[in-house]
Length: 87
Image 1: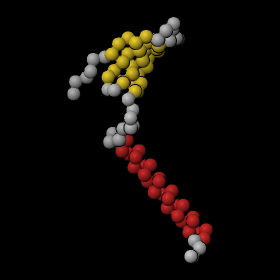
Image 2 (image 1 turned 135 degrees about the horizontal axis):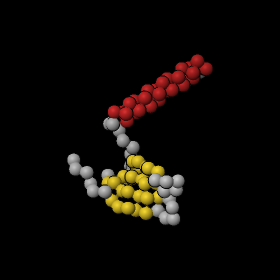
Image 3 (image 1 turned 90 degrees about the horizontal axis):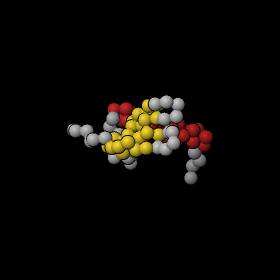
């Protein structure tokens, strides 16, 4: 068996780093273009507005439906589900 040596190991490591870097850049480009979404994401906070020093109104999206929440103060309150958007 032939020995690889340090030059061979360095070349292999550089090639691996180049391939991984290219894959990361490709994935970022696809996400920016909207072709790839986060896998399995069912819950997301779309927007939050501070009403005063303690309370916030939060618009969340769960399984494609909007949910309005009032947080802070004495208790958190579900204001309600928003109607589904048309296509």
